[in-house]
Image (cartoon, rainbow, N blue to C red; front, side):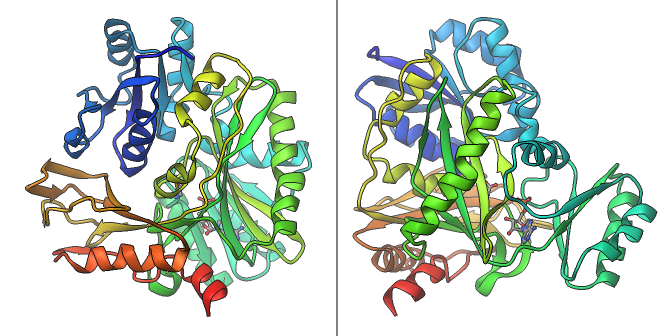
Length: 423
Ligand code: AMP
Ligand code: GLY
């Protein structure tokens, strides 16, 4: 790997802040730019933001040429689904992520389901419908609760879990009335949910530390589905045998499928899985890292993350990934009203990094002494310790030092692990 590399990260959230910080730690990297980033990412010397929108591919490519950027790491799915990789590769620029076609694994539930059918990857029973009337008729083939998914990108918010058929009927009608062209009905999978991240090279792959997200807005997994309210890694309640089953029954056929289908996929796949009584089943593919999982997964990589991505974009042999033995837990502070109608403009306290505690910024404006929220998820407070219970205590002790107005966070991030492991 060369030295003094300048890199570009696309995106603006807590995930991208964590990616930029992790890449900047590499002795091979001299500077990381983030486009468009957020103003609070400019706190460290080796990271700075560039005011170019993540969808302005021409301006991004111009910046890459001018600055001599070695390669670009794409954070969010929107740019991938819009073809940023195709656009960069057409101009001979190195970029980490799948092309537009392969990005449909996330962009279209239907495409992902067909892929899983073809490569025999365990998932929920499902069916796609083009009209409300058909979907309502189709309800007879599904048990309660019924999972209803809008086809297309929804940032984890396009899923409704209807407790009974009547609610399902109303939701289906609402989706089509709002302009949805097709919906997927899906069997409900009962069990714990896990997020697994796999870096794909030319003909090999590397699995990153596993994490668990908390999708619901409120404590005790109540409230609406969100993009994710907190995460932790590792997940000690998962047995080695179940982990190995996940690798054998899900990761291996997924990776082989991507290669057999000859997707142009030098990037990362995020496999969302539920461990059911019949074994692991996929509930979603994403073609990028998760937010907030990234904020806890990357700090657990003790080897050089930039070296791994550099090898992937240069089609070289991937180095082994070394996991740290620490536990990392992150709590998201979101704007009041998120995910339906988040407030904006609230003042946030001046949050400070401490030993083994750090802040990843997302939808915020201003500078450290005068931060305001800009809607949605605002910051992730991340803590690291020898075990999860300690990391959890540290994250919440930090949060309790501050007064948040017009914001909320969950008080139980990590409860599934700490309850099962320590009590
Ligand atoms: P998705 O947008 O497919 O990632 O779904 C968002 C969230 O809804 C998932 O993370 C799960 O918590 C939940 N979910 C989605 N599909 C199912 C399913 N078939 N069974 C149970 N829960 C599901
Ligand atoms: N945290 C879930 C996601 O990034 O999709």
